[in-house]
Image (tube, helix red, strand yellow):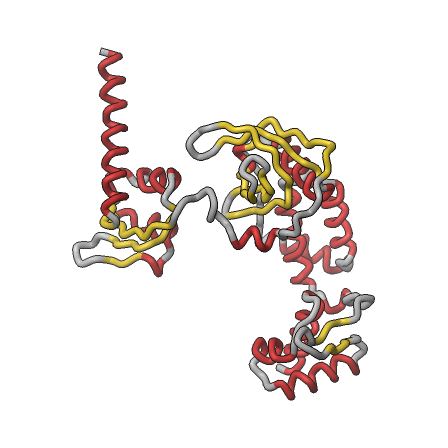
Length: 319
């Protein structure tokens, strides 16, 4: 256990700029005195740890220190390669190809033979498929370069209501969320930060104009995920037919599904009140009933009437 803790402390210090002793004690569930002894042991082993006092004090590993390949296991390298190949599937990027090559170079020949014998046991594919491949990769690569070089990008963007607007944005970075790629950027049209789904971007133009950093990082933007354009949150109570059990459990999670005495399934969940939510509810057809709130139930009924009216008009036109 001590060896695992020492390795864990080392990895924590390698992955963060500075960590205080209390944080380490809480993380590994030991006393401060134990952390002090562990840090001394790590120092003695040749890993240079520097301590700082004051309100911003703590421990950090000297900047010049680099981790030895021996600490990274064969299984660790396998996991890194799986993740890199998944991202590589979407990026037409020579730097990513080079990174994969470098990681492979860390694997001994005997380990490579073992990897080939075992075959893939995990696959992570982030490839965009809506447009057919090459065009999607070029958009993703161009936006990634624009973010790295801080170049302004302009494009046509289609929102969930089908309205197309020309946007001019300052790209911050790209994120894979759920099952799609998104661009995090400062939108000059809205004068605020926005997330743009790449499948809705067309006519991309990366300009020669450079922009100055506004000091906002992707981590901060991620915390705002969906808060601007998605709409206010609404608490839903939904009743589903029992034959949809598997689909409902996959969509909402086992902890959100309550089986009722009559066999139906009751789900309580929170969603942004927008067109996506209504589309999701309508996708279940007659097998779902909105129990709460009444406003959402009434909106679903109104949408149902509009759908019926569309088919009635079509039938009359074809008569």
